[in-house]
Length: 208
Image (cartoon, rainbow, N blue to C red):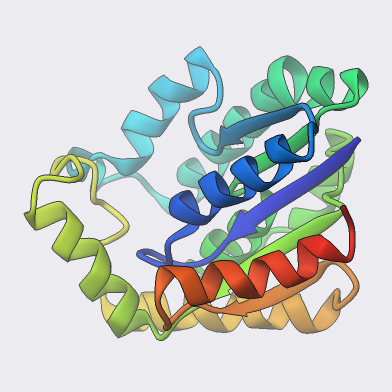
């Protein structure tokens, strides 16, 4: 079993690259599961709508944190845990590093996030791909997709945050990567989809 997570700010291309990784692994006959946070379970889907809705602008940071944690606990119990026990390769679009970057750094919440996660016995990923991109470029890509109808305009609460929020977010992610260099692999995501994929593939070739 291998647990791989994909992290990064808005518009970095995580979803696209997860599909590339899935295809790569299935060609090598690995049994895989793709999932995401928030929203990897039925209950999580309802939580995701609240968290991403533009109508949730009054949601306070600590309540936001609790919703993400509720989604994660449900997700681990119903999806991630069973898949890892089966021996699947689990590919997860966002996981607890998002909480450290978004709520811990960008929201500046003074909460012991590590202790909270230890309380719930959260599995640690074997590998985390951090797709890194200047926030202005990432937001430009995200809004281009939104404006073209590729995404729901009512689910853009984080994209509507100030640029300073996204700059803090990037700083938080890069700090996490420096603290755990053996788990994190930082990918330069400013290039083409194919170039980004080749960076990821080089890492996968050393594992699979």
